[in-house]
Length: 166
Image (cartoon, rainbow, N blue to C red; front, side):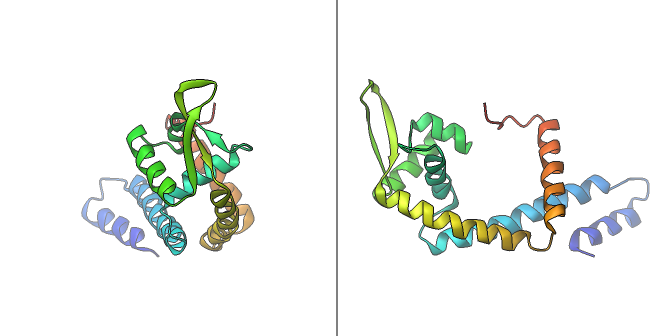
């Protein structure tokens, strides 16, 4: 039994008229998010990055050559506000991992591109990141991981999640 099971048992004892099953699901989703978040945060901190900074670098990397996007597209892809993306871009630019430059086809627009150093770093870190995620998911078999991924995808789609790619 886990802590959430203890809480559910207490609710069943104190309020037998209620079915606390949803609390169990939501409570475990919350706990799982905390466990995963701690593992990711610790890994990126070892490499001098915040999780959100890695998200920006990874988004640029997976966009393919020339690894360049607008700040707006980055904000949309990482699901954060334009103010938050500006702060992340400034930190990453200060670290020499990306550059901002004027779009030659439309001088009113800014483009964000990985530097050679940023590309090398994200390529190196993504391998360790995947290994870290494998460690976090190790209590589940490959089949259970696939089942969980499918259930979460269905849950998010049914909950009106708007973060789907276009």
